[in-house]
Amino acid sequence: MTALIAAALLIAPVKSPQMGLNVGETMIAYDPYHLTGPDQGTETCPVCEYLNRPMVIVWSFRQDPRELSPLLRRIEEATDRHERHEFKSFFTFLTNDWNAKNLRKELPEWATENAAQLTSVTVLPHDNEAVERAKFPTDGSVRNVVWIFKNRQISHKWVNIKADKPTVDAIIGAIEWQVKR
Image (cartoon, rainbow, N blue to C red; front, top):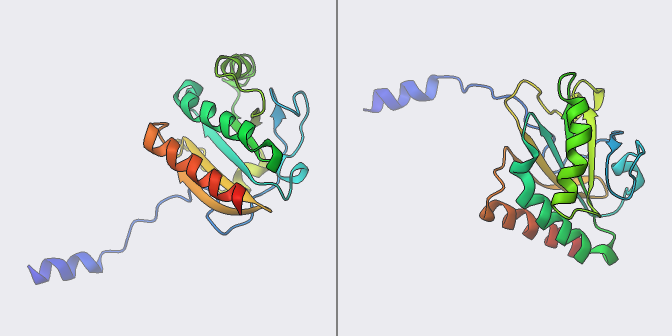
């Protein structure tokens, strides 16, 4: 038994792919196309434009947006509730050649179905250099990353979430914490 434990400790850990920027790191600037929200029709950098404000950014790749609907609805409520604190929220969907046209049509409809007016829904090509700087793999190992930050400093992060009630509640709790800081 001791030999088995010792042998297991000698095996080098498998290096997993980087799953996005980590807590404590600085959120990167990027220029998505805004399909909905206050900056609709522009390529405004959310991080640059709203630099010191508390915000949440959700990046998604190869994921049906409907899977994130419960999260979008709750983030929209939080954005409305904390408008006086200038809280901002963004969903960025990474696109590729085969889905860009469809997403540009479907995502505004998805936002409308979920009553999202303050939350910006954006698209960004998956091969944009910002994706690499954000350490977001596009090999299919990551479907989404949620970052919460203020002054560009990431305070909370989730990877490959399912928008179930406990997870969404945890994200909303982190937003509440960030807004009140």
